[in-house]
Each structure stands twice: as structure tokens, then as C-alpha cells.
Length: 227
Image (tube, rainbow, N blue to C red; front, top):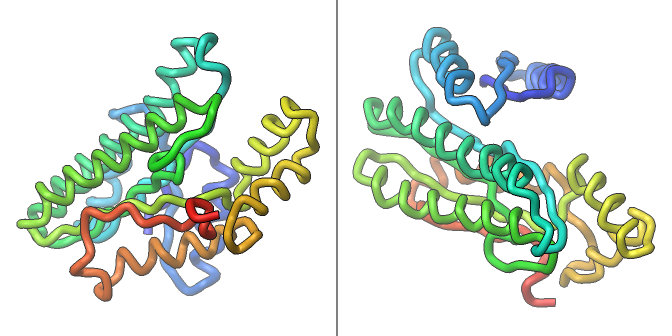
């Protein structure tokens, strides 16, 4: 397994956890906004393993704010990370998978890709775009034996969500903890998701058990859309 990340410490921790679980993993520094860095990372993967069986495109950031004051540089950056970076990785992985005539691509979208809230136009737009790329890629790559799916998490207890909770909560006169409790109460299950619960869905979609599932955008949101 190759772990591509812009944060060296986080990447080392991921590799260490994978190796402790009995896997083989390497850390590759990569800023997904850079086509050149992604090409170099994929070349290193091919040199080491000679194939790409699974791609999990999970790099993403959140920014938000009132629509009348969206700065263009912020818009361009979130598009570069959440959408262009994902398109590049899908393109590079699919080129190898077509030759292999097998492979699984799992793109990480969000419930914000299926519904929207105020002050989040930038994020919602990119995550809707991820679903669009996923569906088109599934249709194009299916004849080559490649599945392409998206996972759409709701609020999950990741470092990004904890940071968002502090920022958005402060804007609403709330603590981060209070904002997270409010979001938990928005769900049918009355709790937030755990990263391992999202990882389990990704692992399933990448497995042989999911070979007849493609072009889907699977909601993992604790039932927020029903609550």
C-alpha cells in the first residue's frame, strides 16, 4: 500500500498503523494539487509493485462562508484539492487499471455532495463534482472490469471535522463540542460517525464482494437525510 499525503507526520502514522496491522506500506509525499507530484508518486508505485489494484481518493479540505464574500483564491484552492486533485488521481490510476483489465476506485465525496447548507457553496460544489466524476468514470471504465464508486460521509469525527466544529461553532456563538452535539442530533442515530465506520465501507467497495457495484454514491451519514 502506498500512502500519499502532504503531511509527513500524519503519513508516517498511517504507514505505521498499516504495518502494525500486518500490511506492507510506504509513505510518499504528495500534494494532490500538483500533477507532477502525482505522476511521480504513481511512477514510484508502479516501480515497486507494477500495478494499481485500488485507488482511494480521499484528499479534501473544507472552507465555507457567506456567498457574497467568497474570495476567488479560496475557491480555486478548494477546487484544486477536492476536485482537480481527485480527477488527476482517477486518470492516472485508470490508465494502469485499463491495461490490467481490473481495479477498484473509491472516491470520497460527502453528504454535502447530495444536499447543501448555507455558507458552504464551495465545498458542496466540489463534492457534487466528485459524484459526477464517479458516475462518468464508472460508465467509461466498466467495460474494462473496473468499478468506480463514491462514499458520502456525514459528519465524522476526523481532525477536519473537529477543526470545522471549532470554527463554525464560534461563528454561531457555540463551542465546538456544542456544535458537534447539534450535528449529532440531526441524525437518526443521534451520534456522529467514526473514521473506522467509513473505512469499512471503503474496504468493502474495494473487495471482490463488491465487484457488481459501480457508479454508486453511498451515503454513510447516520440517517441525517431522514431526520
